[in-house]
Amino acid sequence: MKPSSKNPFLLPALIVGLALLPAGLVTAQTFTNLHSFTGDTDGAYPQSVILSGNILYGTADGGGSYGSSGFGSGAVFAINADGTGFTNLHTFTTNTGYPTYINSDGANPGSRLILSGNTLYGTARSGGTGGAGTIFAVNTDGTGFTNLHSFAAPSGPLYTNSDGADPVAGLILSGNILYGTAEYGGSSGSGTVFAVNTDGTGFTNLYNFTATSGAYPSINGDGAVPVGDLILSGNTLYGTTYGGGSSGSGTVFSLSLPPPPLTITPSGTNVILTWPTYAPEVTLQSTTNLVSPAGWNTVSPASAVVSGLNTVTNPISDTQRFYRLSQ
Image (cartoon, rainbow, N blue to C red; front, top):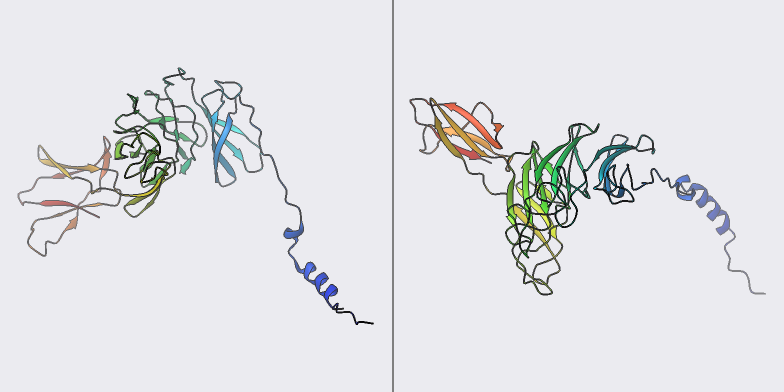
């Protein structure tokens, strides 16, 4: 008889191996439905959530107290990680409907929120005074809702305007500046990259994507329809566009933030120095002599944001003084 080739030690070894597996790998996972949206007072069609401590914060594209069956303008909500304590933090107001979709605060918030301190920031892709969406802020307890910026009403067949339209991506925050994208609008209707202070001042259109060829495959040099979230590294923003580019299939892009211009304005016995807030990592310096080595020193006091601009007021002295922004 042919001897068996089976290893008599194999079965015990397998049993020992299974016994050594972590319990979590052989135990069924537990799925929990934390909340089912009704399409009415709590919202409908939730888009994303973020977690802070044991609380989830998110946006619902439709529903809210002003709508039923998911046809409202949307909501911002909070819910504990165990499913308790669902709270509608803000319901977006009813808009005028097709074709303008105008209201006071925005409509259809589909983006990921960001949290700084006790304030949530986000975008709504329609509504606002121009019907082209808004940038908003609301406290985590539902108080203090603020429409930071309403995008201007687009015009013409290319859907163009000065600042962008339909912001669907989430925002990013650096210092006190929010950066984001609008998928349409701008000078060519292909979308924009923008910045705005957290108090709503200093809105800046940083970049207009260029016009596409129109006919399929709708090509251009830089991309079109930026719908993805940005990231910021140093002084450079990185992002993607859904369309455009050399084949019409989208692009990955970088955008170096431009050096902010410094404006010097005499005012009585003082000189007022101002520069935009979109470049947070700059320092105002001065020297009395441009001959090398110049010996630049940081100006005191530190800047404060006034009317959307970084502002420093210095007294005028008998000694000539030169100023620069250093990064």
